[in-house]
Image (cartoon, rainbow, N blue to C red):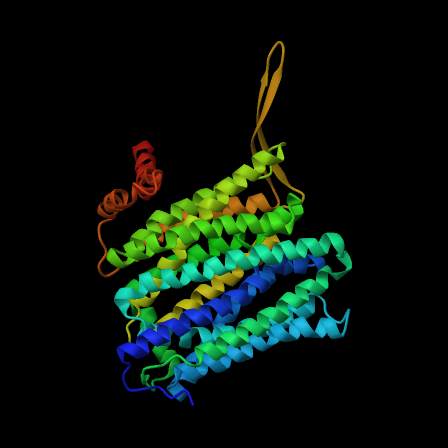
Length: 487
């Protein structure tokens, strides 16, 4: 059952790539219905605190520290497909449990129940991850990594847009018309997600695998290989700092919009969709240029965009007119969508590219384990900081007083969650310094890439001049600082 073959034919490769996309679509249904605004709304209904929200957000990455078990399983079986499919099935069954148990036994589940079963879900999902990465790395030709995953990402994000909007409208309708069934609705979403996830596992089980034998070396000695690879260590340092910065803020965007601004799930979902649509529009552009030039350059372009969006989050909610806050939220989500498409695609691909084929699962597992620690610490630290800043605020206003009228303009108004967004932006800027020392094969000088990208898409994206200049913003800023230093 699920026996690897000695060599994949062109037909096997194409069929496998289609099946991986099929599983990706099923997994997207599962992820959409059990994460993001839906999970936060459900957790808040169950009385979750900021710290518990942080714990829920930390689980997907914290459980990656157990990926050593995945390496052991793959080495023992020499069957990455079997490990991936079995662990995927075991991961997705708890979603069915979360959906069914409270519906059969009302009142039997609370926030602790949710955290426990999601821990099981993420634990087995983390075991499936390394074997899936190594399997797909051999399945998809390296020259097509960027274009293939950008295509797969555009499909899954399109599905996410349609499904999340439909689900949000449905939940808001239930909330207004039948509020006593709102919590049951979230449980039903988990049940549907579990069924979709198990369907995806069945699809994935049909994808072919080329036989690869791992060294029978001591597992801890194996892990020393990526840690002795200086260039890979540089990537780990950057990636760890970046995910720590992002995970401090990201879990609390939805919390802020719900609790701080009083926005409904439909509003939040529409904003998320706006972000995803711009991600869909740009992900293939990022993928094409990542394949042609380098993933590192794409990160250097898209990361400053995300940092700007973090800074803009500090100004959300400070205006007395709601339409002004909504306009700013739309701008922020557009920037986040464009930036995330490039960052997520390129960080994944640069890890795949720098990992040697023979030791891919070891390199990628080491990357996932180390970054998991920092990615899990971020939401927990964010929850603690949110509680610390709960009753603290910082306001900076510009006031004009004249003979006939006066004007007050809010420049800065930081409180609770806004402090997190500013802290995350500062750490993200620091992390970009660490990216500069990473070397990537085929890397092209960044100014050359910017010039080519401007020329290639200026007819379709007139404002790309701004995006193109962001890549030089970092150098120009530090150049200015260094020139201002006293001698």
